[in-house]
Image (cartoon, rainbow, N blue to C red; front, side):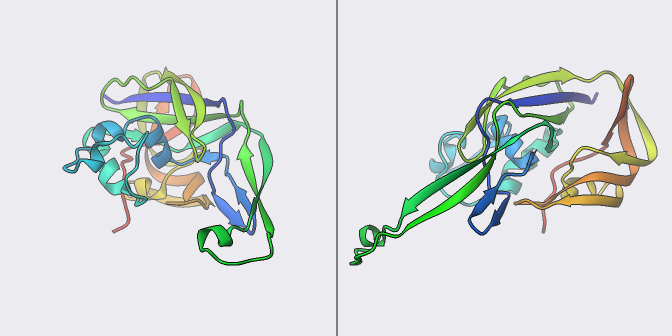
Amino acid sequence: MVLIYRCQIELHDSLYFATREIGRLYETEAIIHNYALCYALGLVDSQIYSTTVAEEHSYSYFCPEQVPKYEEHLTPLNQQEIYVTPARSLTHSSILNTWKYANNNYHVEMEKTQKNIPSFGRAKEIAAESKFEFFVISQKELKLSKWIRLGKWMSKAEVTVEQLPKHKITEGIFTCTHPLNPLDVMFTNQVISYDVVNMPPVSLIQNVQMRGQCYQFDGIQNLKIPVRMEYRFRS
């Protein structure tokens, strides 16, 4: 039996990650990638089976190397038939922070200098009290964390979970208004049109028109979620 949970995130701190770097401006897109959500919800930590002492540490607190291992970490979720969609903004606002730093080559590289040239950058962050929505699809009942941490600053966020009512599977041409990971959906559905959201590590798509099967829910109009999504990776 497939269970589908609708989850909402409310930020209690400002959220920052660099979706785009435009000169000195580092901008945070108002979409949260599904890879990031898997880590934040603790679903990845419970799936890591390592053979080295370094990798036994939880990724919530310690990362021994700055090398992404998305395929290694997320493939076990496919085996447990758990899938998390990207999160879209329900309501959000942005704040712009400016930070400054001084040239410290003389300190790092022991260079002589008579100048102390300040530099600066700007970070466009998602403000506290912004809200996001995503879905978790599972073959078993899940108990998700109420509090999670997100982004570069490990910002605090509250998660509320609602199990959606009984669904039915329909087939044909439909539009999914929620953001999707294209690698996870294109193998099981024929994608006709979409808008691209450029962000690492995999750009997302939204306003997707596709042909295939989708979940529909009694009493909830305009909510259509593609069937058989799972984590896939570039070969």
